[in-house]
Length: 430
Image (cartoon, rainbow, N blue to C red):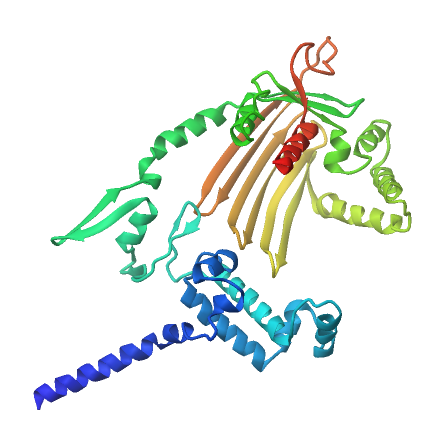
């Protein structure tokens, strides 16, 4: 009797385990297979285009099935995704524009896109990342036990480039390539050495709005990434020229506006001047009123009188803004800056936290400027990826010698815009 009871217990446990495996088994039973529905020859080829790299094919197919069944039960899900007001509007698009072959094709398209979003946003209970990429664990999963995180060895070792084996009761990890082949400490030290003292020279001619920049490190980086031969003309002595810098970088008429500021134009007058120049470029002055007020409202968020509190000759403005976009993520800005109206000094610090589908980033910026010198420090921390810190020291002095308006005669000069366009032309021709 006891033996029969043990057999019965084993049978019950087997049934329970089988039931637990049913969802994955059902995922494989989509007919026809999901990858065939979308015109692919294999699950691997399908995931290459539709997967986000975090799920295997069975998991993706099972979630797709759930999404598709939910849409069939409530088509409004699909209408809302693409912004259709009714089934009639969808049918009209199918008939006139042939955007989809049928309603069913439309539903399948929405279901696969929603599944991709699900996979992209999925974070396992214990997430392990290597160089910013989530490590996949095909069988045993990481878990937290007594405040300690336990991670399966094989997946981590293989992600680092090792080949894991088991023989005679011993686990072995043989280095075969990848990160274990690299001396990361040496690489980091080399990069830090290159970035620690970045030398660059800059000449800006405000009369012609032309910038000249010489930076050996920039030339070296460009020469390393462009096609063979394209970087041959880049040397440590090369100057890059950028014409119409202010107008191209910040919008039409900025250089004219800066010149107007030197002539005693008020802030309000400057806003109107910039808006007029934009409208002139558009060939339409109907937006002048809205454009001026939008610029004024933006400036008021940071520099309106009610933003400042006074302490002697010092005026401090607090900054705190938050932005939330359901599609792209969240951003939160916090900080302050202080103006000393007696000395002309400006100091401040700003913290920016940004969370998107690409990751979490914390940026800290502090600055202190006087009429003769200044320092700007920036720290960018990308969660589980990198921390970058940069400090820029600026000095200003009066000179009896007129500043140079262009590089010395004989120095090589390359038009930066033309150079990049020539690379694109060569790439297209190839």
